[in-house]
Image (cartoon, rainbow, N blue to C red; front, side):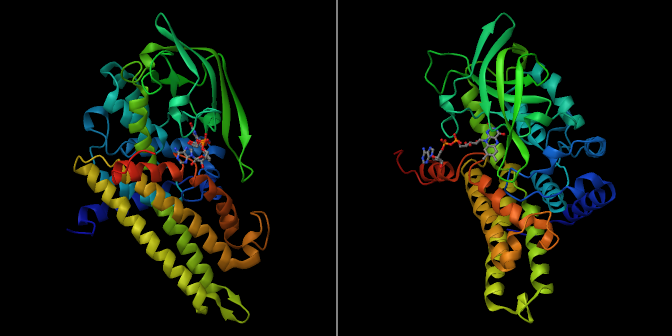
Length: 398
Ligand SMILES: Cc1cc2nc3c(=O)[nH]c(=O)nc-3n(C[C@H](O)[C@H](O)[C@H](O)COP(=O)(O)OP(=O)(O)OC[C@H]3O[C@@H](n4cnc5c(N)ncnc54)[C@H](O)[C@@H]3O)c2cc1C
């Protein structure tokens, strides 16, 4: 067992680092208030300008938008370890990296989509400028996705959609919805749903903002009024959507901004080293040192799980239980990092981002709120624990 990166992997990491430092759009860096593990303050939702588009296109030209996909579909044919290294560096620098298109929609299409669908959608995703939002949750269906009520009724070559989605992150700045709807009203809840792509520009779609706890417009409620979607947009077979969704959800839980955790931790460490309170450096305070040491251990654990997951994927082992494990570990870390930061900063930590006296641009006060979303998004922590208890430990369903 070797826990170190190979020379080739280290060289790749250096290339990625250089690319980010040379090409990262200044508009993006300036708005980087992203909190690792959180969903709410993602600057990507606020900034989608020409610089960011150009950066994404360049990533696509390097084959980095879809680096672990097979070469025959325009991917880079690289390993999942390399993809993990890439995502780690991107999240460390807060750069606009891989996203729902490349980490969820694309891999699910490659796995379950027809050849026709792959030919239509995969090149657009590889190019790096097609953005998806996730259209799963509804007002009465979140953890229990089998309860979705939005209907998709067959009409010739089309599906006609009526209903509502909610908490739709980034729908207002995306091109397409990655959507599930009920297609067979008489089937068992788990069997009668279909997964498909809906173009945001289709008539009948209304997107209304929901302002999140941080004060950002990150998610929305989306209404569908007789929206017509070509049946060629259906992923895999009709009525099998729930099954594909479970796989897509595992892909989502594996999206971890690992480098973001390290970056924010380093910010805090620097703050403790440089800040004096009551005449002495915070880093000399035994309680502060103990808290930072605890955090360092948790970050190290998360890194080990992160690279183990990539290693499993390289060895054709699909990390299903591990997806819940790492989601839960990094959710706890997201909260703990913010809590510890605020404890160390004292009252200053509670100041808002626009205050002249707020430490570290207010990222920790924002993160304190945003880390709440980590507990809920992509499946709540209770649901992850249920999965671990049932699938991981073989305990009975309650
Ligand atoms: C910031 C953010 C971004 C989001 N982005 C998106 C998005 O882009 N697209 C999308 O489709 N959805 C999105 N969501 C929605 C998210 O997936 C749901 O909120 C989540 O799945 C929980 O569903 P719910 O809100 O309906 O809560 P509920 O399912 O009603 O849960 C309420 C509480 O009951 C608990 N609970 C429920 N069932 C069980 C059980 N079986 N055992 C134990 N406890 C249980 C939950 O853990 C929770 O604490 C987002 C949510 C947030 C907060």
